[in-house]
Image (cartoon, rainbow over all chains, first blue to last red; front, side):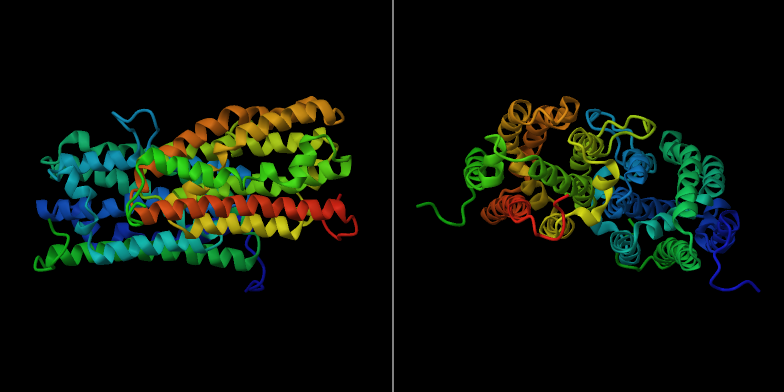
Length: 245
Length: 245
């Protein structure tokens, strides 16, 4: 066995990240499996769209936290597009083009009024806690660990493509114009994960930094999983007081 | 006298902010007065340029912290340009056009090597603490208080115009191409303070919120003043161990 203190060469380190995260990505969660097999009812799909919106709203806040902790101007110049991707651009107030607005459109396409989507009281506590954990992680940990946690995007395109096909096939009651978010992420996620891979290659150069990057990615897998646990529970047990609209 | 619990009407509130901050703005500091009267020697000018750079580098970090704390997407869409203004745009690596790069040019124009500018060990402790205090304030306080603290920009254009004239007249040894930062801010600061004024008008609607906005602005005046105290001291007492290049 190699000296436990030796870092892996960059490409093997990325392979380690990939194999550590792949099996724990939330694509394997029973709720996602049922979603992609067309086995969710309308209330379950709506509960997922509504609660997952809490995560979407967290993204620009966590990306700004990463930037606030990052003294490397070149990294900030690159990372900032993620905030724009989700918040959209100022001056186009009539039709903001960011991911948050696209997710609101998904909600509308599934029959969830905009006010319901925007009312945080509709979010399940377990989902809220997972989103807050992510934001606090990005605020409190070294920026490169937060960057490593974003590498769940390595696995996102496959899930997104499967989901897109599942929505078109099994959930035609969700209007097609609502699927723009998924289509956008098909192109954005690979670009974003390539960027993050380059940063962790460059800044995780000791064995300890590489270990922390893997832990950060697994933390992120855990929180995505915990969100689905909370959503699944609420859909299975409709007596749960909050969230199931 | 008005009920102490009544908020001021928006325009009177802004007047209160303006009159509270104006007299404590660092344009009145003895060091700035001597600078603008042409009474600083080359070492003092260089010490100021070098140490003030620590503040310039803090700006995008504090603006990202404000965004990370701000749940209002419209505010974030507007605020983000401040980060771009200072960091510059990715893809133009040969000639990044942000404020940080412009300040590095100022350093070069004054004969300070880029490596010296970028070496944080050259920063006076009092300057570093003031910059850290600003960043921590923006990370820990409600975003609207951090926005209010940015309102020192209400007073910046006058100081900037005076300084620009002073550099051209009294410090011709600083090459003219180094003055781009000051020229850029002549246009940027009024736009930025207009934006921040609109936000504090809209979000500081109780007497208590208005009081906190005033306190935030005074805190910012104090930290700008403390930076100049540290710089002035180092220039007056050249035996000070750090910072006087």
